[in-house]
Length: 360
Image (cartoon, rainbow, N blue to C red; front, side, top):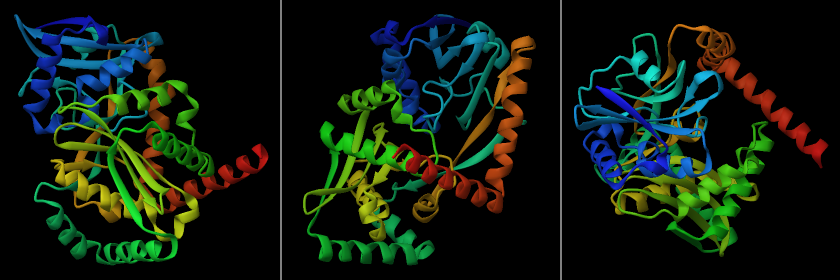
């Protein structure tokens, strides 16, 4: 096996077609964050993005998209934003992970959402559930499962939807709209949410805003940005932006107008989106790793992702370990303990409220 490195824009049509064919041949790789279109679009905005093309003789057997940072630190493309990471490869590919990162000019490759079945995976890497809405048996079957396992949530969401329409006006649902205006409304809600909950505002970075805009403008059978919005009396109430393959929609940026919070507009929007997505051929909505109440209420299945790193022996890998691994383990401990998680979340929200007051 040998490896060549390329900028995403240097990939030809043959390479892109091969990438897509490999992705579509394995259901474990059916996630838009692993699509060539996603890496190419991010590469247009970030000069740290590279693609390793893996050959077995004359045949391409895999693609490894990554970002190369100082000291040879490798990260997934759009690290910190994506819920699926790893190689796109032929089934049963055998490789030496350390040899691969060496060929990529890396000292370390770190990941937090590595999909299952990856040659990079080792027993020491920590696994986490990634909740999904499974629509493979249709939307009606999905709602039947909700009635059985989250019956109270399902009934109350429908009741709140009716109440919202009685008190505020008729509801309209736009699935897969490509209009920029509602997208910017959604991003504004998301920024407010980040600040309100003490999180870092991702949309303070111009490249992320431009990335979302470019992905919304990308519309093909195999890949597209998907903007979903719910309106009441023609006023936007809730929405979600994600990306899709032919059959998987990746949950990404959900948000709503807090003036309508008592109606649970996020749950209303997700149920409406699931119905339209199923009608359009989507079989799975991957909501991504992370403990969120709405995910627990809506999920009817789980995938698995892994967190960890592949490292070569050297000073850079040692420095990276000291800076990153203890912090990651501490975070994992907090996330696994409901009391610690609740305390941390409360502290972040308090910080967010104080920050809002001070900035105001």
